[in-house]
Image (cartoon, rainbow, N blue to C red; front, side, top):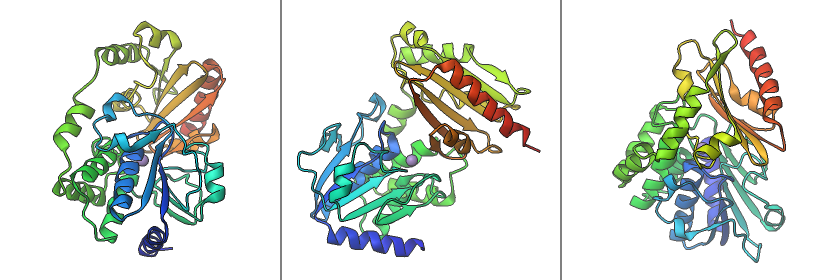
Amino acid sequence: MNRLELFKQIKEAIEKGRNFFVSGHQNCDGDSLGCTLAVSSLLKKLGKNVYAYSKDRPGEDLLFLPGLDTVHFGEMPENQNFDTMFLLECSDKKRGGDFEELFANAKQILNVDHHITGEEYGTVNYIEPKASSTAEIIVQLFEFLNINPGPKEATCLYTGLVTDTARFLHSNTTAESLRCSSYMLECGADITTINNVLYNTRSYKEIKLLGRALEKLVLHHDKKTAEITLKEEDFKDFKIDPRYTQGIVSRPVKIPSVEVSVLLREEPDRVAVNLRSKGKIDVSAIAYKFGGGGHARAAGFKLLGAKIETVKKDLLKEIKEAISKLK
Ligand SMILES: [Mn+2]
């Protein structure tokens, strides 16, 4: 189905709906939370009742997002009878949380996503892997509805665009994502705050952890694979939460020989893995084998109760196989 037809269906669903449940994915990032806020605000402008939800709270670096106080973090509504669910960045039904009862009661499910692994569980499925971010799709939705985002919505959507493209560095950066970003600036996105908070602020602990991570960097497979493994004691040494590893995995991709970079993190009850590719290897396909997903150049997965050394061994084997298929 073409883009305009899908936007028409979303528009009709918005017109029909009265009580909306809006959510992004668990462990929210700038795109999923930015979109949750912008869509919630849009729906409220249109006179709808909105319950904005996010299973997890964001890291400190996203606390500047305007409207965060309107989001229910980890707090499901008592009455789960919503006629419309608006899910953003949820590549499957469970990505946002435990929504079984909501799904059973909803008449309309709007599924808007840009992950290539996205499942079509909605009554309308707008899944566009060519979009840099879900924010890019939501900007286009505002345009389709002929509504200009206000400065707050623009700040939220620009955040989605800038974070998912890694500051317009990844190959998902297109003329369209730059156009949408430019339009958000016109609408008053606060890029001074965004740039300062997201890219010019790192705590002492984070900088120290980065140092530890780079020290632990190892190259495999004829220097084509870079691997960093951070164990529980590394996080303990700096009294830092394992979620503060942002940006570490992309560093080794700068090494000319490296095609794939992996970061393994040992967390209390699970192993979390981030993968980055220089472009020749689709790391989302590798992540998918371990129950995860993502994009061709950036993907990840988490394994509950797994042993980090086992995960590392299995993962390196998969990567080796992918590398051996390169010409
Ligand atoms: Mn995204």
